[in-house]
Image (cartoon, rainbow, N blue to C red; front, side):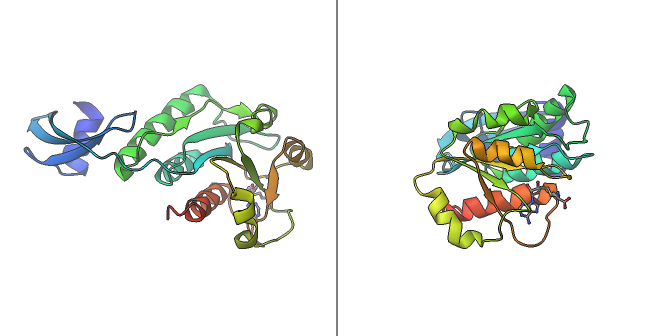
Length: 225
Ligand code: SAM
């Protein structure tokens, strides 16, 4: 390999000629390989197949209201580290970010690949092209549970609610509003499509914080943290 991946191995991770590394392919298979480094070129000689990291028992899809600026980069990277299976950038009534441009989606896919390599997870999360809220609501039936954190929801500790909400659930979607949150109409649309609103407490979390908090809690509830 050459270019970014080679530079990351030699300059960032400071790997040396002869070092052993673990490699993961997009199917989640894992290998131990020995590096042969010459100038700007890195080759990996496969030594053996190793046990792939366990696939998460709870499949999480994060539908993230497109935030302003570069915040989506942060969400993609952290959600990848938390084992999210798929990230759906959402275009809602109050999204202001210009993230809906296609070029951003390719950037996020590169960031997800790099974050997956860094954290040693199995596979790379899918990053979808931006989706309108109504289209996301129409897909809620793909999940056994859809959680929509809403700052105006009744404040009820998740410790009491989640066990019941996650019983028998293998695929869960979490939908987070943008900086301006969801409109009442969007919340009604979501609950009519089967989503459950949840409170994340009395403090208002930033849009880039909220989804990661919920993913972490779900990982904990699934016994994976
Ligand atoms: N509309 C809110 C306001 O103007 O104060 C802010 C929305 S918040 C920045 C962005 C998203 O994070 C919300 O749409 C919601 O999904 C989630 N969120 C943040 N704090 C929350 C809380 N305490 N309870 C439930 N959801 C929350």
